[in-house]
Length: 343
Ligand code: GTQ
Image (cartoon, rainbow, N blue to C red; front, side):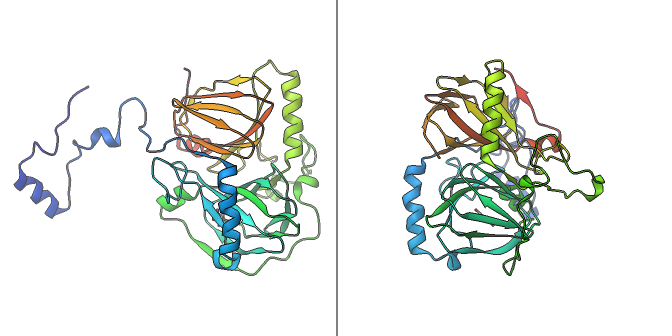
């Protein structure tokens, strides 16, 4: 590899003149912007114990009324960027959101897409473009960019969910903004997962043009778990993993973010290929450990952890475990650089 020239090798008067002209030499920065062989992520693997964050979240419920927060969220910051970073990886934002009984989080719409993985509590719901989506443990609920959404809570205990947004990308693109509006009227019917998309392989007969861009915005966990169990039962002994897809197109559910659910049997290990995508793992239930780029993370129910692009990842379950994996492969596919490397 050729050794490139450094800034220090250049005469001071030349450096000052470049400064004054608003230009800089590429060659001292060349390997920073185009490292050889693989990216050099800023992102470092993060781990958030739910047990540790939960009391802080409940305290936020006492300290900050929802009216003062719009969204009462504690953000999971990438250790590589430091606490306060509004991102967990280059493309994924993670936050734990609390809604107390009787509260509503006001309606708004924004350019980034949001998704929720429900962590605890009964009676919570999100309204997306007038469709009321009940939130139950492990459900995946989508709020695609550009869709109005508000949250409500009809139950008796605190409701908590994990927000996964593609906010960092929109922020980087200087495309992130929101609008506020009144709470939405709710259509008096069950959500599309209970009506149009009740059974896998069946969609309503109608012209494709009539299908909504995001036809199914709630993926009930009970069905995901059932699917994983059957796949595991009749599979080849590998880890059972399913992709969440748009039932009308079979494609990823959102433009930037993708989601999978995994089941690891007691004692089962998983050694996925190195992937160019970054990932966030949320433990729906179970216990085990993951080695991510040499760091060993001991995880339990409702914990969350992350992996940078091309991280070496090994999972091992101490008991039957279910993980949801959020990733940014859909974006990388569109940009044409998604890649997997065998180990
Ligand atoms: O629930 O709409 O964690 O707009 C960050 C921004 C949640 C939401 C977040 C948001 C939301």
